[in-house]
Image 1 (cartoon, rainbow, N blue to C red):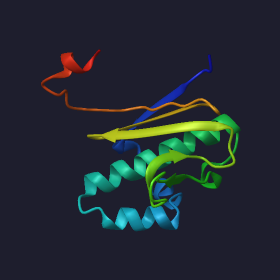
Image 2 (image 1 turned 60 degrees about the horizontal axis):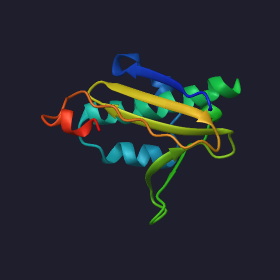
Image 3 (image 1 turned 60 degrees about the vertical axis):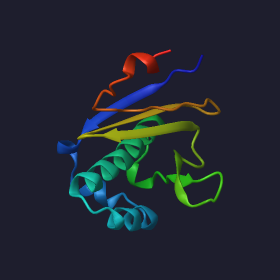
Length: 126
């Protein structure tokens, strides 16, 4: 079984450097977000997954390229990947938090973060 590494962060951890890491596609997506909280969560998630992959590869997060190509339409709103890296990745954000996970490729993983518990959470467990 492959080891899964999970990191989390709070929007209070954001710096201007994290915003500098965003590529043109991510900046365009960021510009479409109306609420500051949404922009912060998106930036935090992008920075966190970049930082995690960079730490695993012992490299600079600014050099980690992310891809979110949708399997149906190829637009950049699908699951996050780090092309050319040996890691499968996942990222999620909710409230003021983000979580990122990575495992050696070709493992498949997904992470989900919810800061509010749905009323039917016991039904969702199975």
